[in-house]
Amino acid sequence: MTNGLVRGVAFLATLASLAVLVAGQSGPATATTLKWGACPDGVPRQVACSKLRVPLDYAKPDGRQITLTLSAIGSLSAKHFLLVNPGGPGASGLGTEQLVSAALPEAVAEQYAVFSFDPRGVGQSSPVDCGDLSDLTPHPALPYRPANQAQEQQRISLAQQVAARCGAKAKDLLPHITTENAARDMDRIRIALGRDKLDYLGYSYGTKLGATYATLFPQHTGRMILDSVVDPMVSTYRTAYEQNPALQKRAQQLFTWTAARESTYHLGKTRLAVAAVYDQVHRALAAKPAGGRAGGAELDDLLASSMYIDDSWDGLVRAIADYRKGNPDTLLAATDQLASQSVDPGQLAYNCMDRGWPRTWRHWHNDTAASNASAPLFAWLNTWYGAPCAFWPVGPAREVRIGSVDVPPILLLQGKHDAATPAIGALRMRQALKGSRLLVDGGGNHASYLFEKNPCRDKRAEQYLLTGELPSDGLCPAPTSEG
Image (cartoon, rainbow, N blue to C red):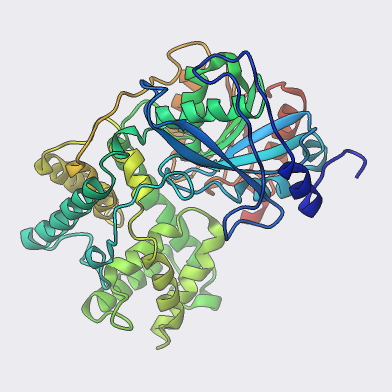
């Protein structure tokens, strides 16, 4: 290509010889050298990686340092460098740059090299280690919705043990695994890359991270797109209670979708009929787990994971349909995949440092029981996902109040029926970040920008990345993939 966009082996050779020297920047380090080379196993071969040392504690910038792993694809002579975060919190960023770069419109790809990183405490960046937790996450798992006080106490005990083990194994790291510190790390990345402005694309939790960066470093905030927006006005604890009714509504959409395809799945001709079949299968698995390991809680996990994107609905529904025909293989394969991800130390480390987690279980119980009345499929499940935070051995940390200073206008993207980050959060982020713009599409897919076609949204985002000019607030139709 004549635009100079370099990929693959040639890019690796170019990066291997790179040294970026940055002088005159504020902070304890006035010069940083990045040496690029091969990435850890599992990262696409077209991608190059580098290491960057940052302070464990920004209050002690000359004290202990930790190592971040960065990744990159594109031309070092590109006009813009786009930093990407896939969310989580606790999700590895390595490899995300390749996915984003491949999906960018050609005109944008000609101008942008794309970078990502594992945030501190995650993956290849000084990860939080809680030890082997497999004995605390057996399958079949305990029911999410406790039938009695004894079952609830068993779940509480598991949460306490997870928190205790994380504290024992990672006590030096945990106080410093915060969104504020991750945002400060992003500014060190900007400096290391030799850029005055940070261009950024953040998904899900990455929207909170990006908005925090913009609040801390407004003078260095460039073009920023935040997709599937986290509510900046409520605690992480309260966020779950925003999610529960949204998830319940999304499940009803799934049941309606399934009923419309009764000739394919044979699970019922109406939403209520499909819901009744789901309940029957749930009770059957709770009584006799498939393969001795896929019970009612595992089916709950599969349902929750399918709420993110419509394309996952077919897999879940086919697994249920096959099970009813006497073939549990699809269900077991999906269960085994999720079982390997049952506890995410990095996610807990970030979430549990936020303010707002009640330290008395009665508070959790009462809030969850109230939420269960309107969201019975998800209320207790969501509570147990976050329950270790009730017993977290450190924290809470100071939090940056997003939008507490004037920030450059930002482009916000949101699905109307997104259940993981309900639309109320995007509306509140729009209020907090004065002058920003919000595009809402009529679908429910989560973190979907660049990964599904939506011409109304995509064209406006493309123009923003090319020109820096924000579109007006607006509504877009549901993605074409939703038919």
